[in-house]
Image (cartoon, rainbow over all chains, first blue to last red; front, side):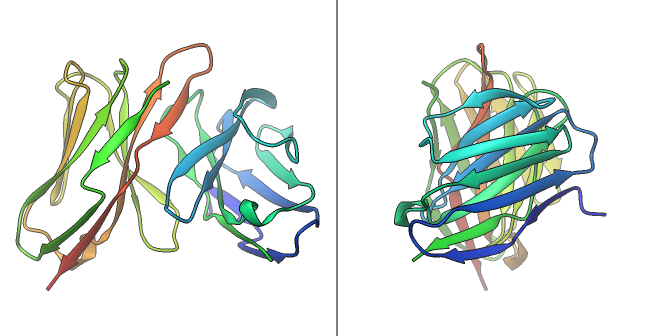
Length: 112
Length: 112
């Protein structure tokens, strides 16, 4: 059973398009996250939700909008994609608060 | 703002050798995590260190935490090729919006 799953795994799109990435966890965790990993492997948190409530909203362009329909799902919608958005996006979850986190497989986004 | 630095950033070592990866962080924290990432893969939790003096061992890897020195080490004993990966430490900053801040990562390459 996959604990944290993301779709799609790969996403290739053109500048200016809008795209979404979906994340689901079946661990019964309360907290979910989106991270961005750039080409130098640096990992930075973007958003954190606790039980559907936005807890952390880092300095991320307004083009990025997370949505949590329930505590098992956290989706990421990106408007007007730019070249600099190319990266691997990881979803993660933790039991409650920023403890040990379990990561999804990642979505490699390439903007051309 | 919490800063987490690892060194070295890249480590090439021969099988059978020992080495240590260092993780320094800039503000008080008593929770530190080590993750492993294989190329093109997700992050896998290795160790959770929750108090000063904590030491955890799994196979050829041993992690320790010195909260007074704000330092964690990941020691590799008699390295084998399978340990080749990128290793991240991550520290929780305490505050109104606690989050996990990742180190820069150490890419370990074990050669035959």
